Image (tube, rainbow, N blue to C red; front, top):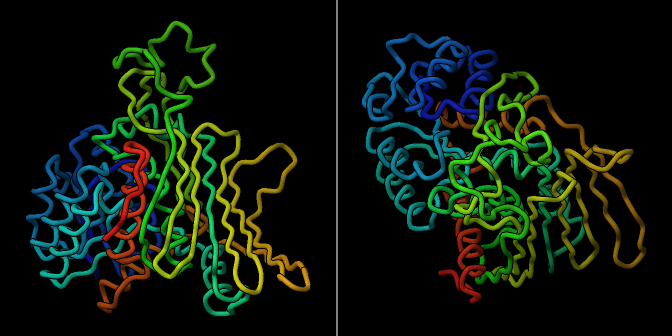
Length: 396
């Protein structure tokens, strides 16, 4: 039995991980403690996950000091990951850390050093690796060799809900998130890294804050705004419903004005990425598009693979994930449809937890390990730096 403590009782802590463990993994795991400085959220989590009141803490240190915890799941804000993960390893706990692993490469390296010294498991919340759609993409390229050796690649993240998820809350400040390449793009960058199978030599980026931000005061909120019913970006209902397939719940979120002067992250980015195996790649992200989808293209010696994973598209457009293969010489087109498993992120969330718990028991390395977390941050943090400085960033 893996005894689990959850640090961070927001959307991911409760719905993404906690409720699934409680309802589906009782035979192998038990949630025995919770920690969060937000007492309102902590109480909601304590009731939802049925943890005794004496086992909930406002200070993560109190949870980490418990001797009867085998593993911790870290779903606290991004800027807290390094400190909590390092302390967890120092206390001999296995760790599942939500993505991003940390805000900088240096912080990732500190986590990896602590993990190596402890000999414990580190799994990163790259749930897309566990989604059947992305696994099929990986297998078509790396096992079936359907397009031959990859020469070029790219990914496009279209985010229609950027305002709802990021610009109303703490992510809007660089000191807390290090930008949305680090916070959001890390998923798609990891998928490219995984499929291409190489580390990166250099990154060059352009981008900016084109839609969000502005001159509104830091304290301005939607709930107290005189034009909230006319503003298309206003949060009229701060309670958001989260559906994870097998689990669901609602939670109150922040509603600070998305046109505030304090916003200092980019809302659109384009990266040119050079991998060490000579693959040239691009990545683009936009937080104010009407679509919500991920698109990937991989061009090889024998053909091209295009894949689209749409959540929200234009009216009348299919929202089923689809992979298209086109042969270079015959130009024959093959469509590959993938059936997703139930659960959040197309079944990726429960499969991620399954892998982590199995690794805690068998002591094998997880599919989404700490090095994967580091490599995605290396690219994303370099991209943020390149956009800010106008320089090509070489990676060691």
